[in-house]
Image (tube, rainbow, N blue to C red):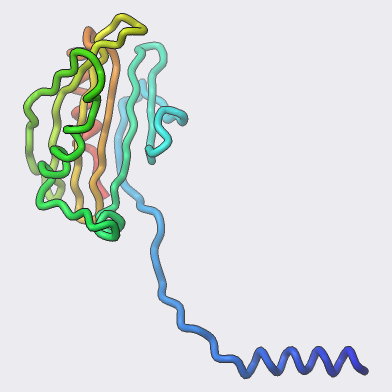
Length: 172
């Protein structure tokens, strides 16, 4: 009898308590991207990346880092343009590496998405190769996407057009 009384007491206490209001949030972000058939989705290239891809035979790879605008605003980071976001990123990209070069950015808009693209490279002492990066930024209504594709500088002309197609496929 004691157990039943205790159970009824606990249940009645829960019924009388006011419940707190809950505010709904959305987490995560879905975006679209297209890759050439010779590329495979992988992991392990960059811990901050939301999407990674590679072709080990061709020795090229890439990844996408998403910067959600609402999350950036939580830390007081609001950019006036895609180019401003790009400039903030590129000023710290590869800066401590030997023979760093960065091309002038190309800015364009396709539909509702704004893009910036540039080429960057540096000399890798370990491999004795110049490493090429295709740097792309896509700005949508909700996010900035940094696309970084890389391989050797001597393969730049073989794959740059595909890297550009990957960049311009990004949307959400």
